[in-house]
Image 1: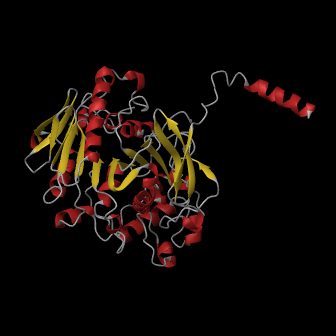
Image 2: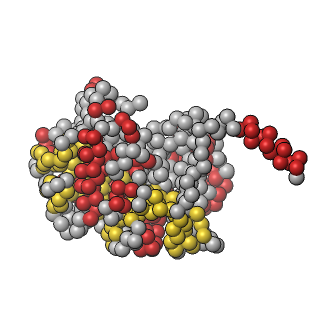
Image 3: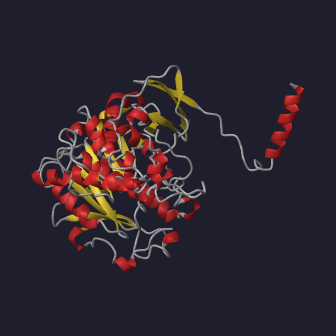
Length: 472
């Protein structure tokens, strides 16, 4: 034993210079909650409760790859929910300190179907925001700092931030999978994950003090596309009562299965996988290989499925058969997409439940030299979540004006989540009355001084192409 301790002392002495600025994390102020699969231990942080790495489905690995989400295996004892699990497989920089364009760095895993839940302590009947991250459907994670739900929780709203399958592990159809199919939905696995999350919320959110009848689905960019698709999925009916779409008005028809299968076969050929590959052989390809292959990484979405996805949302909107729930939708001044948001608002709010349209026009002073055409894609996130100090874009760079606007904008998003589903308007921002949109009507223009209603048709789709400045 003495010899072992002496050797250990030599090893740890060598680590001392590396750990000069390191420290042990603070002790966990634990709190337990019972969900269907067992007991979770989260933590009290900054006056709210946080549960990280909460499984909502079994790992989609091995035989579960390209299958609908499977039930979580119940666990014994108390499961720690105090640290994030790795994001879904995606391309990342070899420098683990450098984030990809989805905000992710470091380790990822195919075992990734986890939630982050931020809730008020002692909540009862709290409304719920279920958040789907952006990232072009092959990047990103629900655990990023910009999506921190602390400000929401302090105003009585529970935030459930989601990891869903990405890339070809999320959107993939192939003849070999057809051949083995036993009647399960095929393709659209990210959308199937989204429905599984909502079913989990319905079954479990009361344990956190939430109201399963007051659930708003929300997302930005690709996450907004997830929300748009939820508006027409039969299996999602009754699982949410409002929707928020930020810079993600994806109004496209579905891709025919035959076309998607042909694209998958051609893409697999680039990594030496022939057209006659079996389902077992396809499942033997590593998740990292799919993420690293440019022809494969983004997947081949979205595809029809007679039972799960019988129609596209654009077709449902035109037919008036979409989920009739209030929708808040918009985009940023420094990106394209306002015309699509306006179209979605017009179609979603034409009869029944209203739609609320916005354009985000605030450029932080510290970004004025880069964002010459206005706030770019994703710029609104640290304002809608009031997460400036946790966002990689904010922190000490933000000034008092940014912080005041973040408080106002986050308050408006919370007011929409809390709004009665049959309301035609809502108030926020010290008396701002946000009116429902009608074609030819007004949108909420969110400027540095706060929101005002402005004629929507006078607002351009976005900047001219040569005026768009990308963030680095």
